[in-house]
Image (cartoon, rainbow, N blue to C red):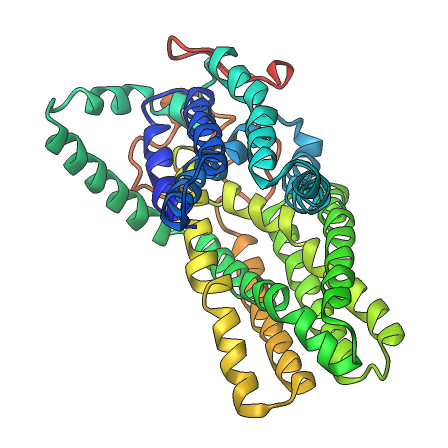
Length: 417
């Protein structure tokens, strides 16, 4: 987590100067080396350091993969493409549990890390030797970015310039209320998911008198299944109703309300585990359907050049303000109430706060700027300064997939992926 949160803004800033796919190759190389390093760790501290460096590789994808997908996806399928990407999270968790459970007992846990590193190697090679793809926003701002990159030669000057650029970008993001509200709602929603992931199996075992190991397995199976179906459902739904920011936030609002009602019912009203599972499963399904729409809003509500930094800040906020503090907070609440049904219900009600924030964002998004318009305009029409907020246009959501090449690197088109 530490490596992820520290490195994500660095990759976002670097994407202004270097091809995104090459940066992802650097991140994956670090991921492979650190994962293999876990296999050769000699104690807790060496294993901890390697796991921290793993976050560096994850950071490259967190910041850059979503903008690349957004650039390459057909206009009518952007949300589904994003959903497919975020689908990898529950699928990866499931594969990790299954393969880890098979490989570790048979060959040892060190071999499991080595095989994991080897499996990632072809993807790192592709990112290293494939087309030197640039993000759309970088092409619109190539002149000013490359000019600025020549200022100063010392390491200290480069660090100072990078910090100043990051602060300016953060100030610009704060001027986009739809983005800010979406980040706030996603942080609350992620906090509830994090609390459920940590305490859900234990609470279920206590309330319904389940074996602790069996509770972990059952909760995990429900979470993976609903994560897969719900993530795809959210992306498909947004494409079907029209992929505007307003529609995305309405979907998030409705899903948060449904999740709150069903999760409260699962713990507060269910008298048996058999009655609990349907409420819990459908509630989780509603929550996972938020993944694609909320990330789409994060991409579309900021200028193209700031999409990587916007995704990095989103990740930092949802962890530091969401699933990092929520498990200890719920543990404290349970220590005071000593009633798992009540504690889990109170936790679920926070989803109504997320729904209210999404509703406010949907109102503002009706007249707010959709920066996919900027991808349709010529470089001369693009925003010249990161502090400049674009003009509103609620109807446009069809990005241009081809545009004149303005740099020496290969532009990104859907057929390149």
